[in-house]
Structure formats: structure tokens, C-alpha cells
Image (cartoon, rainbow, N blue to C red; front, top):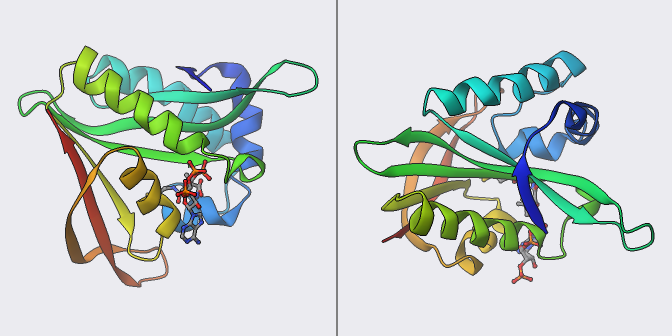
Length: 170
Ligand SMILES: CC(C)(COP(=O)(O)OP(=O)(O)OC[C@H]1O[C@@H](n2cnc3c(N)ncnc32)[C@H](O)[C@@H]1OP(=O)(O)O)[C@@H](O)C(=O)NCCC(=O)NCCS
């Protein structure tokens, strides 16, 4: 697994991956998701990085047969507060790459980079109360369950849902 900056040639893969409604169900990714949204996302990442608001990486894996690098998802930090040295981690993995430990490995790598290289002192992550896979990822990546945040998020359909807050500190 490799983390690298997003590129223009990821746009098609992001567009295709985000046709999966599970991604929008558990993230802020909109649904339906069109190509222009993928373009805006990739082009916006650069600006967001330069403004110290966020940083996004592509998760890349090697195809077992061809050995070629394949885009498999995104992971990044948003809600960055440089004055507080903290940020929030967020991620999604393309459907066919789930369940093989990819997101756990990517999260461990990003947390290590954030705390030990970039100088953050707290990274937090929030998952839907029902998103057990994401909670497991954060737990396995070494984060601690801080709290249950009741009625924390309003979904596009109006549902008000509980979130579980995890964090890791240095
Ligand atoms: C959450 C998500 C990123 C996980 O990616 P992944 O690469 O499949 O994650 P991993 O394989 O590293 O780990 C998944 C863990 O969850 C567990 N898991 C998966 N589905 C589960 C379920 N329904 N109930 C309980 N545990 C579950 C797996 O067994 C694994 O735990 P283990 O390592 O102890 O076996 C992926 O499912 C996804 O993209 N979901 C949609 C978007 C999303 O939810 N993003 C996060 C928003 S907070």
C-alpha cells in the first residue's frame, strides 16, 4: 500500500468508485455523484492544502497479476487547526478493495506521518454509530474511543444520527 498525492488521472477512478452509495451513506461525499464533482474534488485538494485546511492522499495498491499500481481509495486530514495542532482523519475505499486491511494500513501510515513528521498532537476521527467497519479501522490503527456524540450529524434525508469519536494523541 502506498499513499501519494491525488492526480488528475485519478478523476475517472474516483468518479467510478463514488457510484457506490455506501460511500455517500457514511461520508460527506454527495450522491448521485457526477464526473464534475470528481474533477472539483481533485482540483480543490491542491487549494485546500495550500490554505492549510486539508490534505488528501490516494491509497494505491499493486495489481497482483500485472504489478501495476491501482488507485484504491482516498484518505486525508480535514478540519485542520494549526494553532491547536489537531485535525480529523477521513477515508473511503473502493468497494472491490475492502476487507483486506487496506484502510487500517493507510490509517496507521497517515497517523504516523501526522504525529511524528507533520507535528500534529491530536488526530481525531468520527464514524456513524452503525459504521462498525470504520470504527474497527480506527481501533486497529491505535486510536482510542473517546465518546459517543449523540445527534451529532444530520444526514441528507434529515435523519439525525449519533457518531462515535476516536482520537490518538502525542
Ligand atoms: C470503512 C472502510 C474505509 C474500511 O475499509 P477497508 O479497507 O475494508 O478496512 P480494513 O480491511 O482495513 O478493516 C475493516 C475492519 O472492519 C471489519 N468489518 C468490516 N465490516 C464489518 C461489519 N459490518 N461489522 C463489524 N466489523 C466489520 C473487518 O473485519 C476489519 O476488521 P479486522 O481487521 O479486525 O478484521 C470501507 O468499508 C469504506 O470505504 N466504507 C464506506 C466509506 C466509509 O465508511 N468511510 C468512513 C467514514 S467514517
